[in-house]
Length: 416
Image (cartoon, rainbow, N blue to C red; front, side, top):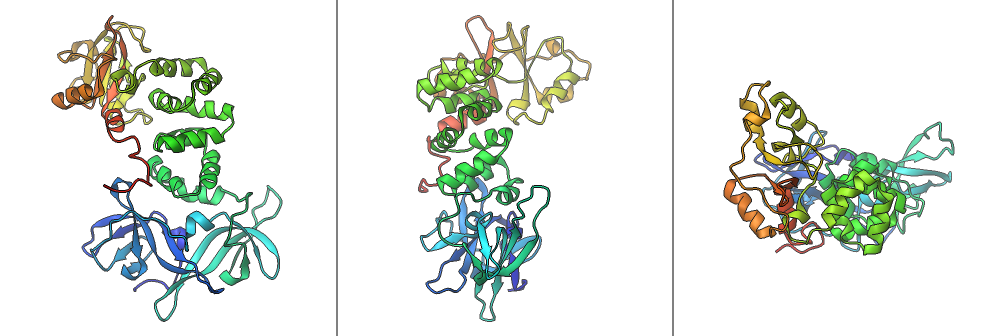
């Protein structure tokens, strides 16, 4: 293996993994170590890599030919695609050890684990070797020194984690992940640790991650927060995602949280909760991009460039009479972003609007919504009431999310 004999594992997180043909396999998410019955340090048996479609697989350390600062290379293109599951005698180095509070022997110095190194012996066996520990100073104004010590000189690495175990360093390792990837990482953790890390995220980040978690995990994380913080998180979520989450709670708890939310944030969610599950109204977003007919193409392009918009929402502008908040005035039509790119910036939207496709009704069934969107190759469709007022829009990601099995986000579900 053409690689250094000692590698710090936190530095591997996120590295690309390539097969012998140079094709991207996935990205490193953790290292797997097997506990021993003696006092010897655990043996590193492989890495966990995340492939497309969020599948995490095990890569045996024996299949890895090189590790460097930019990538991990495999010596074989044959992979076991079975979803990774940790065995009872194994630990995940980053998930189980980072931020663990320990003591250094024989000095008794206390600190927090910030990294763990693995070392390769002459016989080719990799073992956890050294531990990087940041000393606790007891002073908020100064960060403690970092000690690099032998595995055998650290007490508290194994066994149940300290209830006061920190989260800062593990969060720093996860902060660059996309919300969907961070959601997957949280699912790998014990429930208490998952809730602790989730609570340490800022409101906007946690709202994004909750939207990517299975309903069961969403409810458990929300229940672990105090109600005021839970209401803040719901305010940060898209109204349709917040409504989906609240629909999993008892009606009395729904009412409490909605009352704690700001009225302007709670009102759209209340409206969505009124629609029958499995209909266009129940899955639509009530905050698509809406502009009046006298807005210009330049104004529309500026709106759809806003970074917080999802690609499906930003793919078109809905045109209606005032008021612009849903339910709007009379719905006039839609302008797709391709049309916006072809028109002069000063052109008015009222002159380029398309209205040749009938909008959806809020009580239309989800299978019929799916059929209509597929027929016209659309990524979003308007939903209007009997007075032709725009209520919202159903996007393709809404349709996919509600068409797949309810537990499709759950990493514990066996592959078909």
